[in-house]
Image (tube, rainbow, N blue to C red):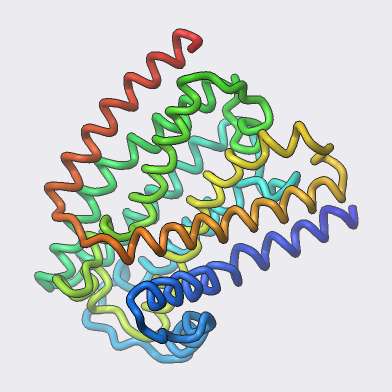
Length: 306
């Protein structure tokens, strides 16, 4: 019982407190690459604290505008709680990978609600971009996880990485998953819906104060959830062959490796972001469509047992 409490506390700290730190590290890495001093790695904490302590200015009385940030935050949190942290899965049940896809889609729905609930050309453009992007990348994520599920004969996110066997289709599924996670996370060059320099943060440009802070925090948690999914599928199959991850010490060791890999991947993403320019929405959709078609081929290969 005590072990579960310890893992639960660590999980809560990771989900709520780690995302701003990762963002701060990413900003620092990008600053170094661009020969700038950059802000402190704790700057994102300061930004969120400042926003959450400010009263928002409401451009509309529509309820949808006010509840959208909370829907986004709840969706991102729900997605994170479905993932394995070491040997501990906060919320686990058969078929939970369907719920994972569903709550991630709800985050994008909240972004669209935010953009369409005010009469602003920038927010409407951002909401339209979010809708087109999510419709083109969500199937890729579903196919990637589907290949893993088919390989592991499991519909549980916590059970999939513990039961997979490495095949050619699984290697390709890792590539698909990495791509889908990157695009779904809204990293450059796929930050098309917000596009600060073009449409003033798109769906969020009318938000301020506490509501904007909730949206920003939710986005960071969503990115953590997506990357943690990839890290878990990468680390757990290896660690289960090295140690008994079901024990307390084994679970902690696995969690530590997950964190190390997460920091490494986040740093690599920062380098990619600093080296690329934003894509146009039509370019992103064409690329996502090609990747989805390739994913269907991978799914067919997996169905044949390869």
